[in-house]
Length: 482
Image (cartoon, rainbow, N blue to C red):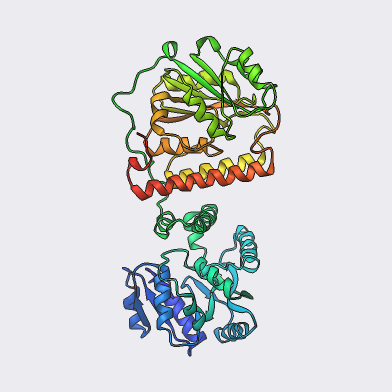
């Protein structure tokens, strides 16, 4: 039983375990408690081992020194409503079945909140179908099986997932109908939704091969922290801009937008813009001709990808003060560009046109887009401490700042990469409410199942990749801005 500062819970937990199964060998492994947990346990005559604060290392030393044939990993914030002798009989019986490597009990949360009933169903699916029970479901196995896997001492976190991965290769993980009741404290401490999102995110990162030390930092990351940016990453004083002398270029990535592009271009204040660059991304219709006829400059990027088109547009920029990115599908209101530029003139470095804060037409933002957008913004707030409301592509940014961000993503991660890097270097960021309507044509991202899945994976991967690099290097040089 791994523990860390559990003094308040031990007086209830220990008598229950001792009374239920007096013949069991009880091994507590302390990870550096400072609340008197070790002293209290030793006063009760219980065996206490000491290890560094690592769940994997604590479990491993306890398993290595256990004298019994079977191992039962139990957390002190859990309780067994059935008698221990009955549960041990069930464990022994299940492990004797053919092709069974280990087992666990059914997950149950000690709370009347109805949300936990849904969570229990989801964990039941994860446990029985995916063979991935939580660590507080009372995982049990033969000691010989554990030793054959090589232990989990190197895992400070996700040790239960590492065990599952090894156990599934040796046989089936049986889930008993008997429940172990887990305390709701960790869900209530961090919040129900936040805890579940964090757990799923850590599982995803673990299987991506992210180092355990980084996962541990994410797991114990402080909530409601200040933004990670500390200083504006610019050389010298920020240039003061006024709308009447501001040189602005608009970049419009386009792919088969011959119907919508004329509407976009006609709605822009062309006379007050230094350049309008349409980046054709391999259109098979008359997009290029339409753009040229409307007086826009046209460049071609054959490699498909939103980011690739934006990067090509940046290469074609003349000397300007501000760069605006705008979609070619006429879902945004191009005339709202003045709202963004007004904020830039007021001293902001990056301005996002927020569809969420603005007037989005019914049906314009599809459910999958709303969900993905909200999830990404939630993770940014949790990991980076900045509260965005949207990842909308309609945005304005000072040209010198854009150059120093050294944008790299060539696909769906472009917008999120820009917003994350802007936070990291401490740019002055704001959002303005903009209009949003149903686009002309089918969205390349949320309009198809494949596009939705690929965009979701790319956006989440970008968030965690940038966070990983930032925490790894600990300085603003973690992203190559120069």
